[in-house]
Amino acid sequence: MKFGFNKLFLVGCMGVWGLMLADRTIRTRDPRCFDGSCEQPLPSTSLPASFDSDRRSRSYEALEDSKPESQDDSSSTGDPIGLHSNEALANPSRLRLVQQEMRQQGPTGRGRENRFLSSRAHQRSQYATLRAFREAIGEHWKSTVQIYGENRQLALGAIARSDGWIVTKSSEIPDKSIEVRLQDGTKLPGVVKIRRPELDLALIKVDRVELPAIRWSNDTQVPLGGWIASADARSLPLALGVVSVEKRNIQKQRPLLGIQLSSFHQGPLVENVVVGSGADRAGIREGDVIIKIDGKEVQTRQEVLNLLMSFQAGRKITIDVNRDSKSIAFEAQMMDLTNLMLDPTELEVNGSISARSTGFGDVIEHDSVLAPQHCGGPIVDVNGNVVGLNIARAGRVSCYALRSKVVSKAIEEMLQTASEVQESTVASEKGLLDTGSADVVPASVQTPEPPAEVGSGLKIESLKPPGR
Image (tube, rainbow, N blue to C red; front, side, top):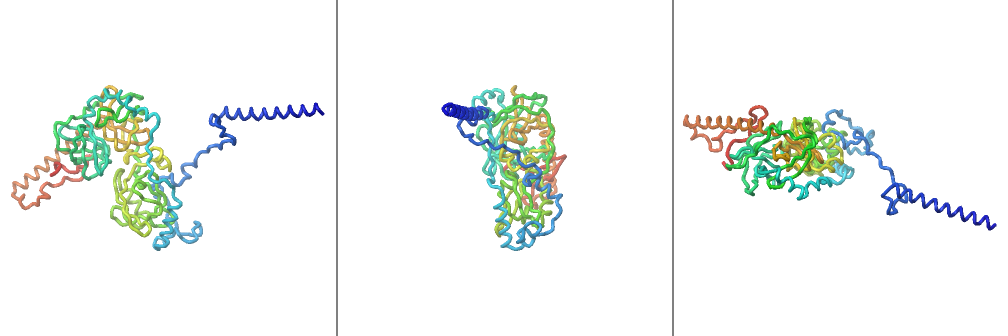
């Protein structure tokens, strides 16, 4: 009996020892288990649903073109009370039920534009790191300006000519009053004179002379993996980056508002909104019914789609919606949204991107961490050569810059066109004076406006000096 008890005690001790070894093995294999939090096996992570299976991940307005107009069938769609029927849109009480249901089913956390700041980007933004590139920037920061409007910074710009011509990113600059801040802190009113839509460039005129014009390095090539610095209107660079793709053509995407219209009925009822899109930033929500676009009434999904397809990326439009029997107006911006950016969480991870971020040829792609309002300024290599102009923020660590030779050539063409139009305007005014008819022309029209489109891809805004 004594032998049997000792044997049983030995077996028990060996069992306890084995359990301790097993627990130790788990903790050793998974470093997260050192705090004793791995009593239960960790659930395995699974990949999210495929891109095509998530309706919020589709190319919203683009998919609507290929969808057949569905017939109302409440029983087949699991809508026994007909909330999604055409009659619901005509019935205010049912329409409110539809809008409430849409908002309850829609994703939460709207409008979160979390700016991405990785450890690498944080290290590059440190003062000591930026100071190391101060010498490379040289005096080019004095040729960089900040452009303000709508109570915020819109973009950066580079002084193209010493007599007050400034080149910048066109789609970020509205057709409203803007202000240009020079490196010495001076603020001047600016007027957009010419736009180059295919390059997304614009020329702004300020009433100032003897400005330090930028010196473009048209023949300099930045090697793959080479460092570049984005200039700001201060002696320290704005951001640092590495050239990730030496030469690349960016395929043009179709501009989208970022909404998906319900396919249950003919009416333009918003079913989904892409987080971070122009519609989301404006405040459009699930359940809203679009009633007007830029003042034009719309009644069907197809009318909405046809109008949205006619707008360019960066264009700001007015959207009137019916929400809870109330008419609300929003100003939304059309954006270049690739299929990747249509993922429900992609824009939240990447943060804000430029409204116009595609359709560029021969660009320099670098991984500087910039914001859309930081585009329009020059980039400089480690030898102090201005090799390009930042034109778009396309992703978390992906920015595009037009090459210096492309920008300088475009500036010369725009200035030449502006000069020709100015001479034509002066000749027209002189002709009115010679014929003696100037005294019968109202003062508001004594200087005729130039045509909206002049030359190849050049859009002439106005050639009047600021304040006139």
